[in-house]
Structures are given as structure tokens and as C-alpha cells.
Image (cartoon, rainbow, N blue to C red; front, side):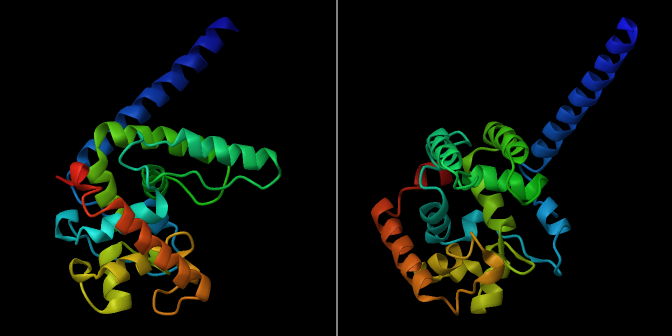
Length: 225
């Protein structure tokens, strides 16, 4: 019995370290190479539209818009915002359901490797992968990948495909208002359009633009250089 348990343990350990090694190798490759697809794209019910664009080709207000909207502490945390998680857990204990608290790094990890839905298991995997991304990629690459794989509509992934679809122009030519209108899609991209916003979403766009102005045009400069 003892030998059998040791054998099972060795098998599990061998699978685990090989999986981790493969993951590290994949992340190292994609530290530099464009990412051809993601778990979310493979799970999509719609034809996938995506065109990769370098973050250096984007106007500074495009990455600033998503940071202002989704994760204003992005330059400061190491992939996981523990203060936001604590708040989300408190709300969960109060009966509000498990919600929010995902940083841009966690969202990138989820989109790349995981699945939609809310559970402690997925959140745990998401957090671990996020720390790995911060370690191996750094902030600039994480933000670049996020902007290229986030869903902005039914089967529309990345800001370049979204900009072409909604505004008929490259993301390199987006105005500040258009960037904010794309950012407002992210929490629920399949039910929103930047060209047909509700009153609440127009207010949200105004709020994002105010946040962008308060953060300032140089807010992301240290991590984008």
C-alpha cells in the first residue's frame, strides 16, 4: 500500500512539474511572439476576428482608457490586487455573490488559458497565472497582449479588429473618446456597441475620460518605455 501511494505521488509530481515547465516555455515564447489564439477564442460561438497590433503603434490614450476603466492600480500591483479581492470576498460573505476584483493581468491570464464563469477554483488558477505573467512578461507585454485578445463584441478580439469594425479605422488613429467608448464595452462586450450606448454607458464613457485626464497622459509612460 505504501509503495502504491508513493507511486501515485511520484506520478502526480511528474505530471505537475512537466505541466509547469511547459507553461513556462509557452509564456517565454509568447513574451515576444504574437499570440495566434486563446482559450476564449477557441470557445467562441462566433467567427473570430482579430488583427495583432503593436502597443507602440497605438495612441497613448488607448491603453490608458482600459487602465482607467478596468484597473487603475495596474502599474502598482504584481498581478493580483489583494485589496480588491478582500472587498469582493466581503461582498460574497454578505450574500452578494462572487464578483469583480480581477486585474488586467488576471483578465489576460483568464482569456489566454481559462474559461468564463465565477468560481474559487478558476480565481485561484487565474491569480497564479497572473503572477507568472508579471514575472515572465512585465507590464508592457501584459498590456499589449490584453489589448490584442480582449473581446470587444461577438467574435471581435483586440482593439485593432474592434476599431476597424466599429469605427472603420485602424486603432492607431483612435481618438480619446473612441478609446473610452471601446473601454466601456469590456465588462459585457456581447451586449454593447460603442455606436449605440445607453444613457448609463454614455455617462460611464464620460467618467472614463475624466479618469484618463486625472491620471494624466504620462501615467503609463514608465511601463511603456
